Image (spheres, rainbow, N blue to C red):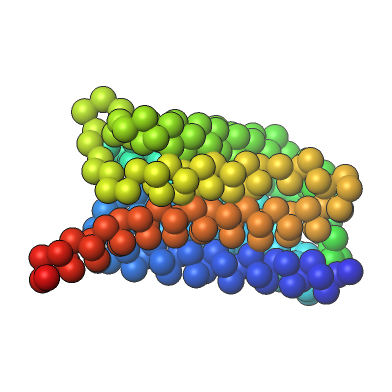
Length: 249
């Protein structure tokens, strides 16, 4: 059974790495800020999943669990949520959120490096944060997961609804160009589902075990998010290909 947990965690790490490389490539070509913060988030996903893989395979230690908690439980979802803010609210609000996240990232790193352990960490079983850490790491994890996940989930569904009704998925003075609205709407719905999957690991923990629950939800959730990204980005790519063919016909 432990080998299955290792395989699931390894798969989640590989998908997160592929996703990060895809968003990084898009940022290098277009320099759009939401793709940069997505890349940061997905690198953190990769680090968190990699720490889970390492802990499951080689046994947990203080260093591996602190890294897993920092990257996988505190920071990755807020950086992903910043991409939603950039897309829906524009660069002004996106830059503000990014500045706050830089402060949060520094604070969280300091807290995770210095927080004393309330229990020893060893063995292949995933430790519980409430047993190992005091208040501050757990507060940061609760805020860092619940609030940004809600922003991503609601933002994706709201964007899909706006696109489906023929309206731009943007707030206030922000602007977005939609080429293939139905495919973009579908991509946003898939992204919302992926966010929901990543948020329900606690629901499955009792039935599957903590390690299995985290590994399954990480792999399925990040895969669904990647699928939503590919659907939305393929819509734009298809439209550009058609435009080029029309111009050269």
